[in-house]
Image 1 (cartoon, rainbow, N blue to C red):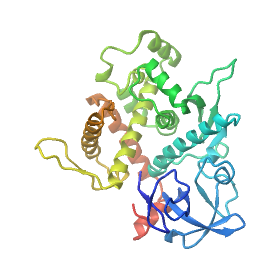
Image 2: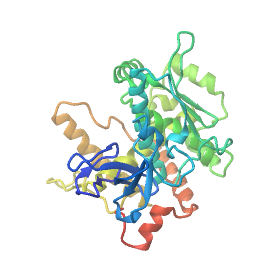
Image 3: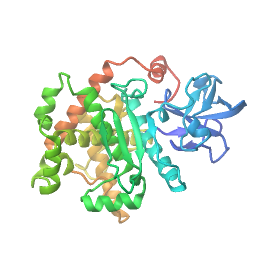
Image 4: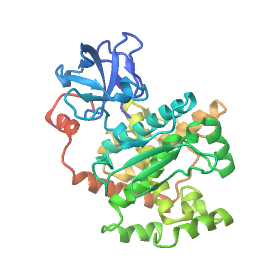
Length: 370
C-alpha cells in the first residue's frame, strides 16, 4: 500500500485514519485517486477537498462514515448513493450490539484493504445489486443457537462469521486447525479468490492451464473436503501446495494461492512506498531494489526476487525480537508456477481494461504520486 500524507500540514497519515493527529484536518479515502485526502467543512454536510488534484471540489462522507463511524471513504457531493463503493458491497450486518459494532468496524477495515489492492489490479467488483449475475456482495453474520455461520463464498456472495473479528476466537481456531496464519484480511483475500475464479477462469480459455496446475475442479467438492478433514493433507503437501488446506480441492488451492499473491503484492507495494532497499554486507545474501510499484512489474521473476529478499529480512527481524516468523511459508516450484499463472491472468486482464481516473492522471504528467 502507498504511503499517505495530510494535504494541510504534510504529516504522514494512514489508510484507516479519519483525522490528522497534528493539525486536526478531517481525512477521507478517495478510491478513484487511491489517495487519503484532507477536507475542510463547507457547510450543509459537504466537505471541500484540500488535495490539489481535486481543485477544491465538494464531497460527502459515506453514510457509514458520517453516522456509523465504521468507514472513512468519501463520495462526490452529487453522488446518488449515500454509501461509498466499499460499503455498497455489504448487504448484511449483524445486530449491532456494542461488541458487534466493534466487529463490524474491523470487518469493514479489512474489506477496504482488500478493495484497495483489487482496484490497483483493475479488478474492481460491481455491487451484486447492480449486477446480479456477476457482482459481489458481503454478508457479515453471527452464530445463532440453532445455526452456525460458515465463512465462505457462493454465487458472488462472500459470507464471514463475525467471530473471526475476535482475535481470541481467531487464534483458538488457528491452533485447532494447525494453521501458520489466520487473519481477517486473509479471509477476505481467500474468499475473493473463489469469486475471481468464476470471473477470470471458469468458462474461459484459462481453464485448461488451470487444470494442469491445480487439478480438475469438477471432482466432488463436498467429498474432497470431508476426505481432507478425515484424513488430513498428503504427507508431501508442502512440496506442492502453499498450505495444507490448499491440498483439499483445486478450488481451495486456487483460493489459497490467490490470497497469497495478493499478500505478496500488497507487502512489496508497502516496501516500495517506504523506500525500502536491502543491501546485505555479505555477498550472496538476498538483495532488494524495487524499481516500480508491483502492479507495474510485468516480470514475475522480478517480483519473486524482491519477495524472497523481503520475506527473509522480515523473518529475521521477527526472530530478533522473539516473535514467530512474519512469513511462515515455503514456496516450492509447483507453488511458484501457480502464483506465476495468477500473475499472468491478472496481467492479461489489466491490459484489456481502460485507464481509470487515477491511471489517466499518472499518464498525463505530475499529479498524485504513484
